[in-house]
Picture 1 (spheres, rainbow, N blue to C red):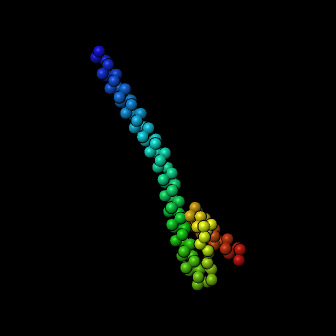
Picture 2: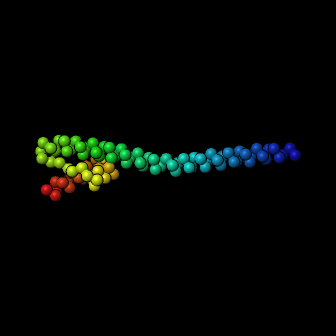
Picture 3: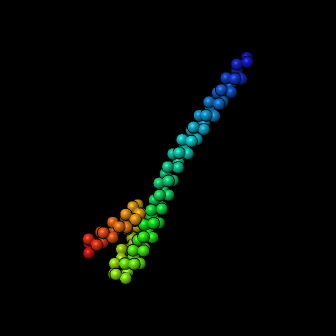
Length: 94
């Protein structure tokens, strides 16, 4: 009879350890997409600001890049390299 409470405590410890590991894994899976979304938001903001600055400065040289869903997506996904890509595309097209 004396071994039953010890075995019960061991099972409880195993259950708590399994629960903590499970919570950690679920939390890890949920934070990964949040990081990706935050990176996309950050790239979108930086790309939009750089695109606005290019249009603001380029207006003095008659050089503007239209802000539409396609250019916003390119600037949003790629950030500053996307804006550079849009500038090069605009220069090669004209």
